[in-house]
Image (cartoon, rainbow, N blue to C red; front, side, top):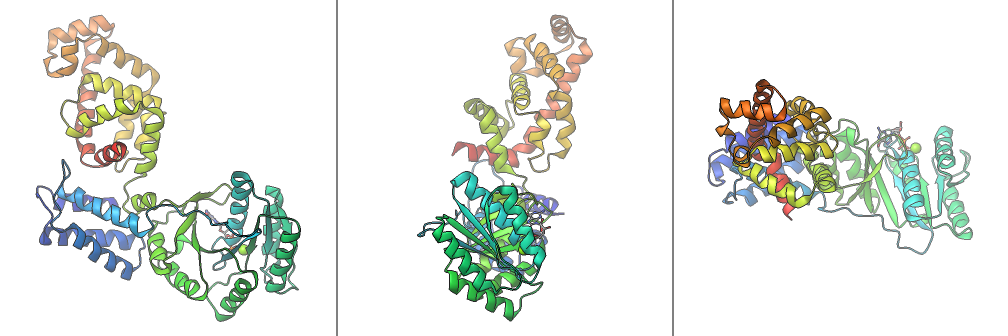
Length: 441
Ligand code: GDP
Ligand code: MG
């Protein structure tokens, strides 16, 4: 599987001080497979691997990073860059009404996304929105948009299957002007596959209403096919952006890379559910993590920043990162902080390869367990907390008596501590090191 492959990359390069032609070659073979499995199109993969290789060669391995991690770091950065590096917002800087034209195949999610955008524009940007459907091939499609508009309490402009799409769109535009709408969203018909009639129709629509945004809506689950569709739409229309839908499914996200590469247009939003709330701005770094199966490292960092005193966390993670000096005082702090963040398991789910930790976390994070651990650690001298190896039988008896627990419980805690310390060392080679760097700057 994918994380296994990337784990191999890290292993392959372990122990090397820098990235060289031969070790990079092997490791990149695994990266290449990982990308193909994530549904990135082959020509894109080839180009990408060539770029990464050029940049990675001769690269010094910084700090405590192993060459494998350094290479994954380069891959991650390049992936992010390829997808646009930052989020591009909708451009609505036009004389109102700003017109948004939705393009894409049938089933891509145009109608749903029209509704989601209307909601967003209404609620977050306080825009007066008008929705219209120019899908004259399926009466149900017009009804679908009408229903969404009613749910949102957004105005819907009537249309029916006897009309021509251009006629509908122009009438809606006229209405929007006269009633001072800020935004007009024009939903269109799609076919199951690209055909000339469909392209001609949407080109005519584009020419008639001169949209400020022409959004190409594409289903992320389509994987490789998304590339051909993107190519055809990109050639026919001056697209201004892409919406990648159904990212809540098990799409690996590779379509994002391919579509961006092929159209050269920014992905502005991703669809993450059938409901009207299921639309998010597209963040290239997050999708890069997803493609690399690194877990949602960035939202993890956000969680940490929200809840934990940052300086304290940094201090602790520095220790964790070094794998040394992670003592019982830190262990206590860590458990308290994880607790604040809503339980370790929720947090750990977001870290790559952290599944095995979840059980341990659950045991440690219950209120009673936290109190018990605190009690035992409080009964130790500062010196003992820093150097748990001092804890021989007589000291353990003293601590157990002080905390009102049995010696076995003290032993159990020390076991947990050692396990955590070990896992922290493993983590520090992966997710934690990355998290550290991001938190520093
Ligand atoms: P259209 O033919 O392009 O207008 O596509 P629709 O908007 O009718 O969507 C087709 C199907 O995909 C519907 O069942 C939607 O509920 C579903 N859909 C659209 N966007 C998303 C999404 O982001 N996530 C999920 N899970 N389903 C979606
Ligand atoms: Mg539709």
